[in-house]
Image 1 (cartoon, rainbow, N blue to C red):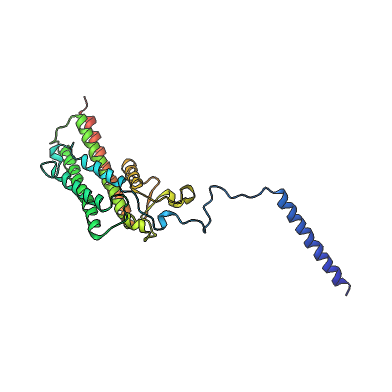
Image 2 (cartoon, helix red, strand yellow):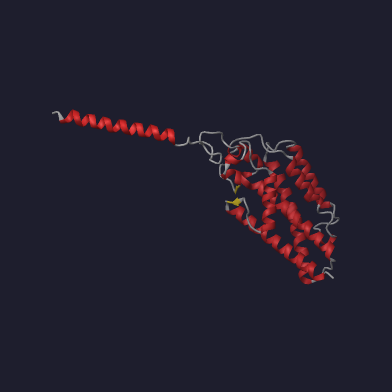
Length: 264
């Protein structure tokens, strides 16, 4: 009977010793502080790209489209889809004006008509530039077009830069349903994975992709012929980036090769 109280006292002594050792260890060990590189707590603010926002500013997309329209004027007449050369740029300018009037400051209002106008503008720009690429490549391969090195490089640069803007427009128009759908936060599954999405602690809470981000994506894909820090997730995004890289490779390779060949 006396053994039981003795055993209880021994257990209490062991527990007391463990508690004192734990307290001593906490005093000696450095205080753990949350790292600045750790992701925010799940209960923190929801990133802007995941929730409804007021919509991105109109001026970035408008300025890029206006540049693509203006880049068609320096092209040689044989590379232009319609004649006189001002017809197609004038039509594109009217479509751009209608889109700006529909959403002058923020892209947050859309209807089927507005959506159709935006896609029609992107399609016309794509068709015009595809025609220029096809005519340039055909002329260089067959040797029917005569260029000096300077004008050839300038023409190739204009077509390449227009191609960058055109594909940026397509990426912007279709990622998660387009700019208005992204502003509404209706689709949680992105077609392109930006670095700020995988590391939200490195971006402000109000960050969301805008046209400038898609322009950067298009430029790096056309220059490096592969994704850099933005990854395509959906199949259509992968195929679109493949098509853009293919066009860029053909344009750059043929233009540079021909220009070097005719240099004196």
